[in-house]
Length: 359
Ligand code: GDD
Ligand code: MG
Image 1 (cartoon, rainbow, N blue to C red):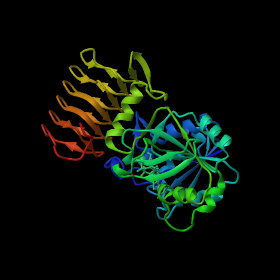
Image 2 (tube, rainbow, N blue to C red):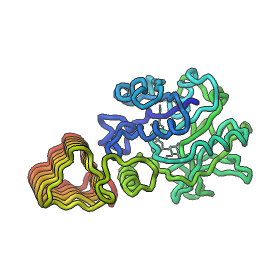
Image 3 (cartoon, rainbow, N blue to C red):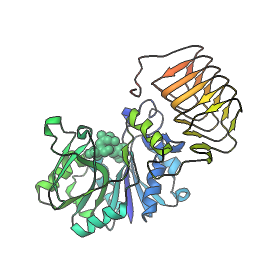
Image 4 (cartoon, protein in one colour):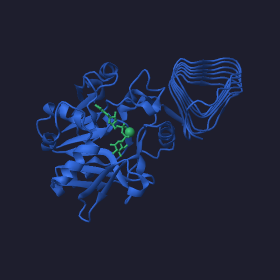
């Protein structure tokens, strides 16, 4: 079976993390995010994955190459200009000979049982089966209303509150028969959510819904991106935590060194070669990338530090993401921000008022 992952978006809501890399390469607990999705597809027997790429396509192609390293065949359907979620599928259609195919949005962290979704698809005889999840705020997603037989009645992308008649939303996980691609016009931008699904429904094409109760999160905003880290650390989603669990919820990568005079408050993940010096405090809820250094008396809590970040003596970080190679000099303090890769915050600085994860 083949899988398709939509990874062409610009990831604007995760800037500055997505300035120099596409969203699928943004690390989640020290691993490029898309690797979790490849694991999921492989687990359910997918052997070939087509990545629909546009924004920073070359970086994705370099990292995932032919897929060999990930136990899959990976091919690329590149768009010269972004073609939208359906246009991207149309652009990949020639690479799909038989159906059905599994399609994923490229920013979903989930352990959904794809076998069950496939079963719903087979049993319903639908041309398209959408996985749905229940959320408190459907206005941020695609609202999907089902009838009593589980057929999709209505698809409304980003509804306003007065249009919200259900809590079930599109999880961005579809099973599609190739016949669906014939309904997508070629050569222009088309949204599967705003155009294709509503049109299929209008024409009476059978579309079914599968309501999943599994873990599911769209990691595409700063608050959800941090949440995804904490959920993995709390093992609320069944994906592996990297490193060796040296005591409950403390994971150490190879060569990580922690001074006996430092304090670690779980849950904490330390990447390879991390150094935590005397008097420093790390945790709760911290992920430190490979080769991070936390100097004497520095502290980090509810924070994600990319590889080779350095917290100088007495520096403090909380509710923040420091992208790789950020350096906080002595006594600098970051609270509630996303900090761009390679930033240097001078002695005692306390930046405020920049966009970042809400408290
Ligand atoms: N190849 C390609 N080309 N991919 C694209 C394009 C494009 O032009 N535009 C968006 N994508 C990819 C993004 O990279 C992402 O993986 C996926 O399509 C969805 O785009 P988002 O920008 O993340 O959409 P969203 O989160 O606002 O809404 C979507 O996801 C929700 C679930 O998280 C919709 O599918 C909603 O209906 C859904 O509820
Ligand atoms: Mg999204």
